[in-house]
Length: 277
Image (cartoon, rainbow, N blue to C red; front, side, top):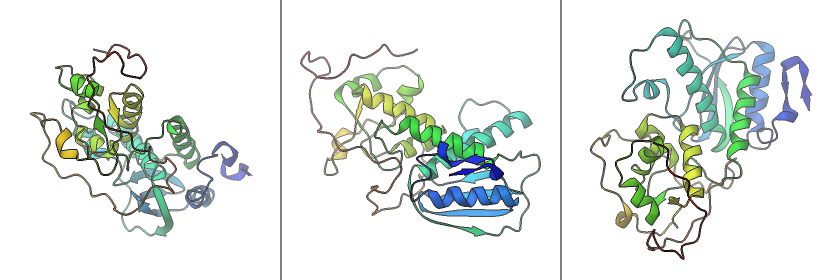
């Protein structure tokens, strides 16, 4: 199906035009064509809101991804100027759309808004946002890791790497893994985008530094001591009960948890590339 009048070619969105995300795509296409203003609310896990002004998307909010406030609050950031604020706002919108589309969608509906969009916020074309979301979903489709459902556990080799003093982004992720947290949880703890964390986690899984434990695994025995800079903030609540079978990014099947030495020469798995500094 091609929709030239809406500037969106759905043939380029093979993942998003499937159920249940198809309704979301059609609603955003209609909003672009009719220059609609309002909030497109997506019910699901994690779900979220698309704020639309005159057919363009000015913000995407979801409990599944850090928002503008969290991204700007990352330790080490300097003063934020107008240009950086606009860039972070756009990045948060793209990440929010990815978080919503990567989860479970139940329905979507329009809600009117009585407040004006913040001044100076540039709108995002729905066609571009959908194409970017599709690209991110396709990039992770073969990794079989759900950013919302797969809880992560350190392998024996992962424990060794996490115990080093390195400060690279992947080491920051390893030190937040406790057998219970997901990519989503770690993204909030590190004030990083959900997509960036999920991509790095997929690489750590491929390198056997992380694994997905079975549901009945005793997570308490595998938790690393909390880092000195552990964040006491409560994480956003996750919805219980959904299996993830209807998610666009399906959860990865559980893996056996082995207590084999990381130096064991019989250990199977690909050779590991040296860590970046």
